[in-house]
Length: 305
Image (cartoon, rainbow, N blue to C red; front, side, top):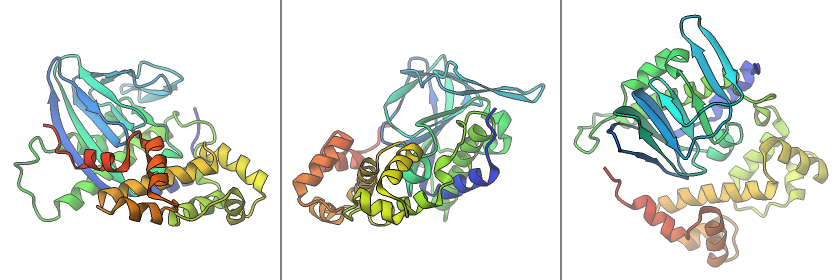
């Protein structure tokens, strides 16, 4: 079992800042499905019943818990297409999938908007995190999750401070799922590397502070006080992508927030360092799969019941 440094884990958890966290409760009847959208951070807690993922959620590390003996072990592979009552999963949204119940199932679905998905979460956590028997590993957080969510959000009366309280509660559940995954043997050896390199942290912070700057490998290496060759190799090994790809990822994440705020495409293009609207639109389409204006329309479309 991988032993995770408690200070490093605390650093990762403290770096995850939730800007918005909304919980909704729903019941899936037989033959019903719950689509999980790509390009979104979503947490699902199974309050009752059994659901399956289509396509399967993956075959990576899986936690198994024996409540009677209080024994916990991690297996290298498992059927992560199946989730039962008390299980939880997080997806960072690299692909779409659906959850389908065996019979009737009750789910609490948390939808998050993070202040910094790329650095705070995606660089240290895999795209799909599955924690079996989350209720046994984190009973307080699971009890909180089981009692959250409005079945009919549109008709429920909001009380003063509800959005803030909901965000804080949703954050607690999210961080508890990540802690359960990391502390009980599913984190890879050396995890989390990205949280243990202050020189690369300095580089990443600079990119996020000025995503529109003309970042070259040489300039980024100088921020990290490294040679060009050492920096490029160290960045790829730690973050999992090239510096150029990471800069583009940060720019696209920033562009989405700016689009949602209603800023014109031309303004966003200039702010993010693109020489023309067309150049920005091409980069956005390569990354997201659709032009900026079309993506903005999908975010403003009314939610389906």
